[in-house]
Amino acid sequence: MPDIGIRELKTRASEIVRTVREERARYVVTHRGRPVAILMPLDTTEASALSHRIQTESPGPAWDKLNSLGEEIGREWQSGKSALEILSEMRR
Image (cartoon, rainbow, N blue to C red; front, side, top):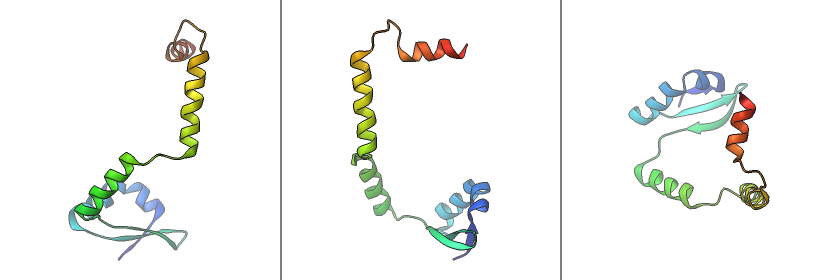
């Protein structure tokens, strides 16, 4: 498995991912010369299970808190304009 530095991965990400996908290549990702991750292809079963898990899992308590704050702000919103309209006006 070849090593690839994080900077090289950043600059060649599309090419590297294409190689992983098409050639089933594997890379050890390094940061300052130390291994930090492995980039490797998923088989179809793993990819399908991962996709399902991502779609059904809750993003976590922080996201739940943001959603509840958004709902609270929406209930108490007193302007005749939406937040999007106000932001658009501010950007002009």
